[in-house]
Length: 325
Image 1 (cartoon, rainbow, N blue to C red):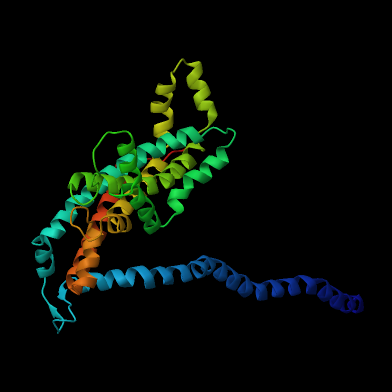
Image 2: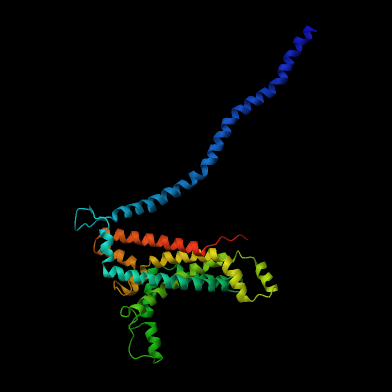
């Protein structure tokens, strides 16, 4: 019996060895799993890091530099650079050309955002249902948005031109006027209205596409249920379409706000440096690169940025609503 017991002992040890080996192997794989878990946790941050560095380098650093320099007098013709506090801002509000550009830009924003949003809703409603030639119509609709602002300004210059413009030619051929009408540069209201119509022509396609994307998410069952309940098309538009399209409308209004607040190409190409249609962005260019007063240019750029952020925030708070379908 003792011999058999001693003989069985190695067999029992051998039977236990596999589980022991597995436990040891499991213990050695735990650090590997931990390292893999850490890598998976850090992977999203590693993927986002290049974009974050890009944004910090090209957006946040210049913004911080603009904020700091707006409180200094920076003029290469009048060195040295020195701290002036709010002196740049006071001089801006004492400048008649800058104050006039504020009112012009306010007109651009109000008219541009309102018109582009309304027209965007109309175009989105037309394009919502599939029909023959829909893709061609969308391609034509995108064209004004795809064109650079300078190119659009040159195209519309041929329409508004005093001597050979399309509008003057049509009015003369219909005998509605004698001689040529000066459309840009003399009457301030007419000038800023025509300039803003050109910009609306450019920004409306993007508004239409953003609102159309929101409308594509609205289920057809809602319209069918409304029709069964006896709701008219107008009632369905007000109670179904508009509420569910509010996220797209809010985004369209924000992009229109940013575009109209920073408009430069159309006023500059159509009206030059004349104050009758100058925007705030134009005045930033004139002050910084013609007068070489970079301190005031920084201050005006800071004002534009702050106003853009405030208006965009108000639009999102008032218009945007989350929709769960």
